[in-house]
Length: 39
Image 1 (cartoon, one colour):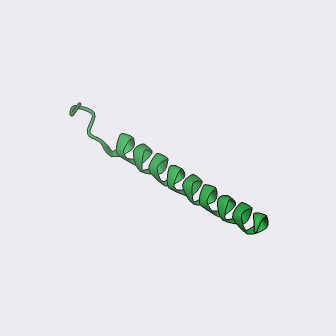
Image 2 (cartoon, one colour; image 1 turned 180 degrees about the horizontal axis):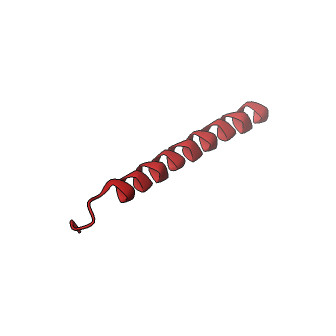
Image 3 (cartoon, rainbow, N blue to C red; image 1 turned 45 degrees about the vertical axis):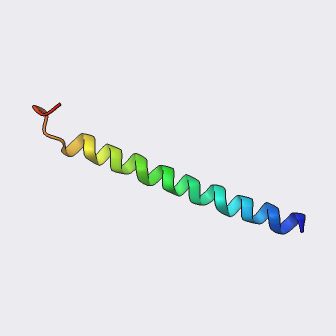
């Protein structure tokens, strides 16, 4: 029981990390492709 719980916790945190990386990548793209004169 504890082993399965621990494994699902690891999977959840890995998915969260992937989501955070995706958001950061999207934010970087927005910064790079945003026209400079629009603020």
